Figure 1 (cartoon, rainbow, N blue to C red):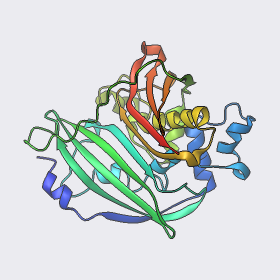
Figure 2: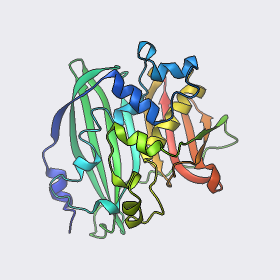
Figure 3: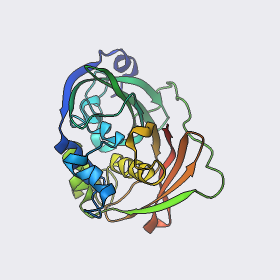
Figure 4: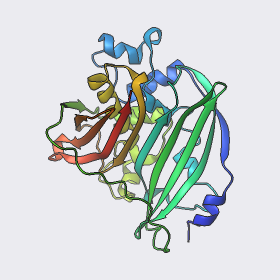
Length: 285
């Protein structure tokens, strides 16, 4: 079996130093669609170094996402075909605001391995801390098609009841045709998002947008629309990737206010509101 759950869970964590500069933050923000209109004062907080703040989802690519998903797939006990890998979900916990430039230690490990029958799910956890203490914790839930069925733990259900009532706010965000090509410069070079031949081998008509690009675009919409543009208010952000997005499409982002959180649902406008992100919650102060 290409996945040895016991070996993967027992493997020593991998630690490494990461660093980022203002340029990395600006490139990430551009990769998730910031800077339109270019002279909008609200957008300049994402693009102009003298006004820069950091959208918390930058944590998924800081230090080129290391140790990231591709690195995690080379952990002991794991030997899988990249074409069978899909990003199933993402959870981010912020311990304090991310500085616009910094260095830190990232420690990654396999936190869980679940048997879903027709697929395996790997939970890859990355804890990041700098000299002042913990910064953030990332959990990436990775589906590996065809690797389940060994009788292991199925894991918890992450499905939530749909939000009740009409959304408090709905916004639409267009995706550039070259959005995936721009976003991948932040460190996720999976050919699924750029190479048409690889995308077809993975079962798609053409390259798809990174799920984490949609993840970042959605958080930006929530911050800008319901959190007064204040990135420091975000405490955690969790989603399940419910469907693919193609460059050139439009995201419809529906938001429901809660008590200290925002529930979110995201769909693709051009495909009759096909679900894209589900079970999505932004917790905030």
